[in-house]
Length: 424
Ligand SMILES: Nc1ncnc2c1ncn2[C@@H]1O[C@H](COP(=O)(O)OP(=O)(O)O)[C@@H](O)[C@H]1O
Ligand SMILES: [Mg+2]
Image (cartoon, rainbow, N blue to C red):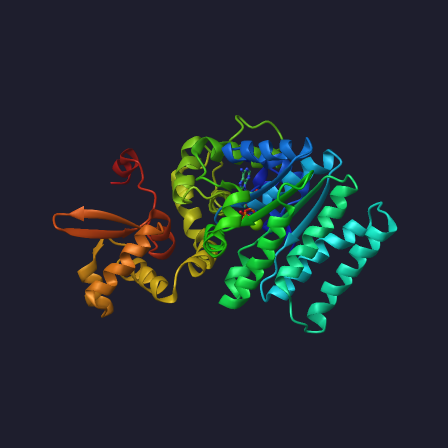
C-alpha cells in the first residue's frame, strides 16, 4: 500500500490551494513573515501606529493591548517589533511565565539584559546591566525573596541606560494574564507592584515604548489595584469584535499565501456568505473563526464534488471544531468565572440546550435558592455570556450563539427554505 491515497495534497488542488491555510491559529505557530503577510489592519492599528510615531520621533509611550484570547494581540506585537527594527530600534520581548513573581522578574530581566549586553555601551553601563542580570537570574535559583519595588526600578534603569546611550527601545510584555491565572492574591500584587514601579519610572522616557498585552480581566485587575499610575500613563487599546469586512480580508489573505493556479475569485472556495456566518458563530473572534474555517475546509475535502463551500459544509466544520473550540473557550471561562458560575453556565448549555430558561426553572433544577441563582445569572449576563429577554413579568436567560453551538451541540445552520423544500 502506498500512502498516496491518504495524502490530501491533491485534494487541496481542486480548490487551488497548496494546503489548509487555517491550520495556524496563533501568532506563536506562525513565522514572522506569515504574520506580516496575513495581518489585516483595523482601527486598533491606527492607534498603535500613532504611538510608534511618537516614539520614533523621540518621545515616549506606554500602551496596553487589551483583548480576549485570540483577538490578535501577539500578531500586533510582532508587527510592532518589525516596525521598530526597520527603524533601527531595539526590541525586547517577554512572554510572561505563570507562577510566582520571582519567575516573572527573572523572565523580564532575561528578555532584556542579554540583548542589552550585546549592544555597544560604555563599560560602566555594561557592568551595571551585567550585575543586574546576574542578581535576578540567581534569585529563583537561590530561592531569595523578591523586592518588587527594587526589581521594577532596576528594570526601568536598564532602559534609562539605553536611552541615555541613544538607543530607541521597545519592550513588549506579552501574555500578562498569566500572572493572574496562576498566582495567589499576594503573588499577583507583588507582580503588579513590580510592573507599576517599572511603568512609573519609564514614563515619558525618550525613545522608549512599553507594550503590555493582556486579557481584559487581568488588565481590569491591575487598574483596580493601582488605579492612579495605570490610568495616568496608558494608551489603552482595546480590541473590538472582528467585523465582517475584516473577517473577509483576513480569510482572503490567508488563502493567498496557500494559493496555486488561478482561482475564480480570491475567496474561492469560500464565499462572503460562509465567512460572515462563520464570523457570527465565532463570536467575532479571529482565532475561533480560523478554527471553524479549518474544519470547514477539511469537511469540504471529504466530499466527492468540488463545488464551492456551502453553509452545509460550515455546519459540518463547526461540528468537527467543537472539541478544539471548547478547550479554548473553557480556558477563557475558567479565567473569568468562579467555579460556581462556570458550573451554572455549563448546566444552562448542557441541560437546557442553552436556553431560553427562567431563573425559577434553573433554581429548581439545580437546587439553588432563587435569589442566589438570579445573582449568578445577572453576573453571567453582565460579562457577556448570556442574553436576557423579558417575557411579561419574568426574564428569560439564553446562552449566546457560540456557547450554544459548542456546549449545547446546537445545529447552527438553518438551511435555506429552498433546500428544505427539495429535501421533502
Ligand atoms: N487583524 C488580524 N489580521 C489577520 N489575522 C489576525 C488578526 N487578528 C488575529 N488574527 C489571527 O488570529 C490568530 C490569533 O492571534 P494572536 O495574536 O495569537 O491572538 P492573541 O495573542 O490575542 O491570543 C492568529 O493566527 C492571527 O493570525
Ligand atoms: Mg497571544
